[in-house]
Image (cartoon, rainbow, N blue to C red; front, side):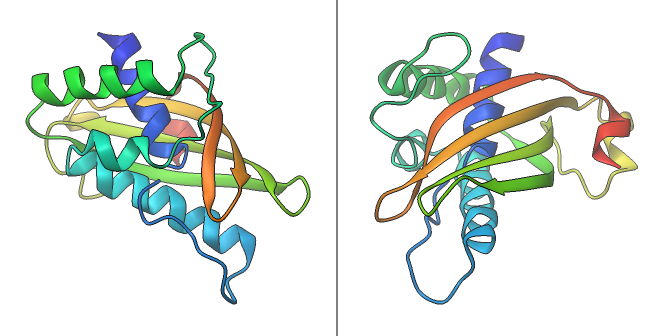
Length: 156
């Protein structure tokens, strides 16, 4: 179960992913923050289709899962969990050229609304740290994700 949770969080934060970022006058860092916010919204709506659209076709994560396998895992996870609430802290965003970036973030996940950082312990939320590699074609897409368990201290 924790593996599925980790994968779900990874997707959510890897792009964090649904709002997608179009060109315009936004800075790339702002586009990536919007991408992550969109992923959070899609996860909380329990929308595997929207999340999958935010993943690059060549996606591969630390466990060797590809885009289609992640879509299947999301469907199962969303069937098992009726309520998903996320609390995120985006750390560093590193641009690796015009069309590649790495983002680091921490995510707490619970079945109830996480009103603030103080509520995380009471809700026994699971916390993960993510490293996301993104590629920009017309919009930012998640190309690779890795994650590990984290602690409340990492969110502060």
